[in-house]
Length: 135
Length: 135
DNA sequence: CGGGCAAGTGAGACTGAGTATCATCTCGAT
DNA sequence: ATCGAGATGATACTCAGTCTCACTTGCCCG
Image 1 (cartoon, rainbow over the protein chains, first blue to last red):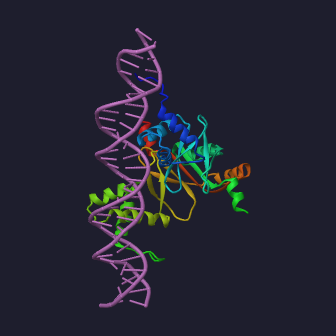
Image 2: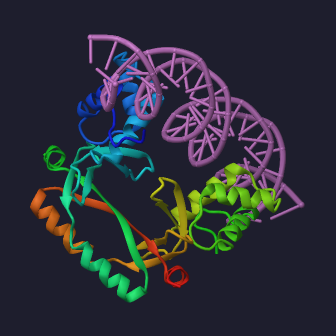
Image 3: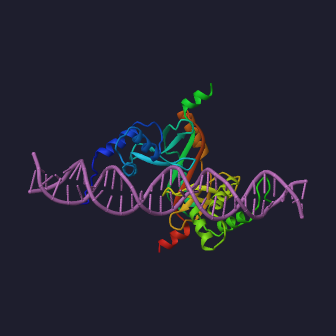
């Protein structure tokens, strides 16, 4: 019991494939539609469960869109970073941790709070959408 | 004064009062419960609408908790800032914009993206909860 | 190379947030 | 006081996400 490993099952493979087929961010609903459209026999609940698992494994990260929707982005595990999301095409890029660490230390000193975690999301226009528009 | 196109109505006053009675963040559901508990005749939809309005007027701001819930915090309008939310008691403090501006410029130069907006939320323990726990 | 069983699955019921509709009400400019 | 745009609230609805439970399947071990 309680074994450390996760099973590599067929449905999970399918969900991973759906994720890979997506560019940029996507919602759980998007994947559910994809699965339905392609008539893969994957259940709704299973997709939610797989997304949860992938997030735990840090190959996906959950972000909050300005609209309030919950979306996921693929990302590299074990590596602190943030995301820029393109308002136009939805594409996502990882960016290094900016100088946030030291700023947070300052805040802790100044306010007496202990800052445990943070969430930073950037939104804007990706280079290719800028090019398209500045034409 | 409540003009500029908005009416100062009784239900809105009630919602404002409920907001004021709350310390720290709260969800729409919290207010709906409060209203029901105190048997104020305010409708569900009206509460959502009032929160939306207050957010527009920038006396409330919507934040995303780590759990994914949507919450609101009271804040001062016309002033760029971020929030630290206490994981323990839910209390919220505003903090000045850290050195994010320059970091963002760097990113723009480095990556070719144009960063339009961002969202930063900090989570941790407030001074009084730290004191309680370090005892 | 099976056998056994916990982990995983899927159908569908359920919950709870948020939105839409619409008949009715009310704020506040005149 | 009048009156219409704007606001309200009851209700229905949609949609994300969770839960349950009988059934299946990956995979550890003999």
